[in-house]
Image (cartoon, rainbow, N blue to C red; front, side):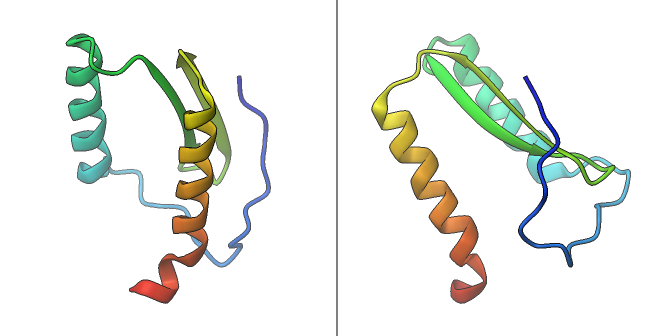
Length: 83
């Protein structure tokens, strides 16, 4: 499920070991939607506190999922330009 991935932004320092409330909130919201049957597939990229990365996926995957991942990649790569 996961392999070590080298980051493209090496100047980022690992987050503190405290829960990130925005991540907890997002995951809680997604869990509720999944439990209600609204989410039928998921693909995620995770950044861990020890500076490692992993991925996970479950459920249905379509070409739209791949397109959404490309859109998210673009947003991440260009977020500094829009902040």
